Image 1 (cartoon, rainbow, N blue to C red):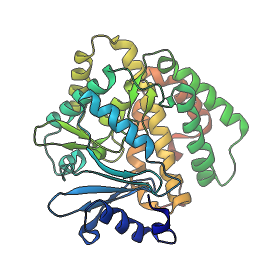
Image 2: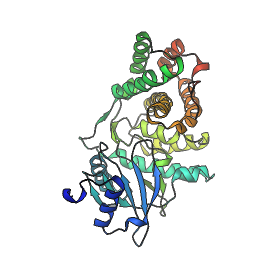
Image 3: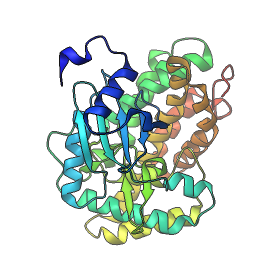
Image 4: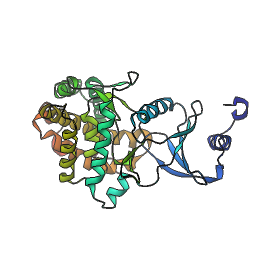
Length: 334
């Protein structure tokens, strides 16, 4: 990076500088998408289409670059990195096109081949030893994040008061017990947001994977939950069952009953955390549109809580949060 050249530039000027330095016309950039973080994406038109990830500091693109190299080494289909500036927070990557699995599902495309291909890609990612420099997505971390969104954001928004310490302690103990199958189970690479919005159907029929900078080392059930129990859209139950069975058939090394218990535990943790995360996005980040996913997320949580493997958390929530109050806080609207 030429520090003298970029000193004093605003973000748009920096984007133009970075693109021009790498042979792209800044005028060919157009907004593509934005996720729940502060990253944004620009599609670069022209003879050599590309996508620019704009991740301004304190966002850090270095994990994304390292993980991309790891996954490409496994033969997983992730975008090729064309150029990057780690200091400025720019990554120029291959454009995988517009066939997001989320878009295809929302159009009514058959879910079975899309989920099959995504499950197959997941098996490839998980069979390889994960890089030892990835952070842990273990049972204590999972419990801590769920407790944070529930008690720091959802509870005061719903009840107007801080949560009692006894409620925190009770739910924490329940999460610890419920997550025992995760704590004692196998460990692997975990994308941590392996859902349809981060997956693309490529011309080969295989799955392209994006937005993996939050990857960690955790239980293999977690990403399968993210894929099959999507908080943003309904996925047919038959398709979910089919993909789960396909996955387990491809993983004879996993003991099916223990895996299913971990799957339920991961589902209950994820849906509790995410249902309350929508509140945090609305209140802290000014993004109330995410509350539209709240009702579905709470329904998915109820589905998980009905399973025996989630009984400890179900009992604790019953003691502190009546079922009728489990939803978006009454004072908030999408």
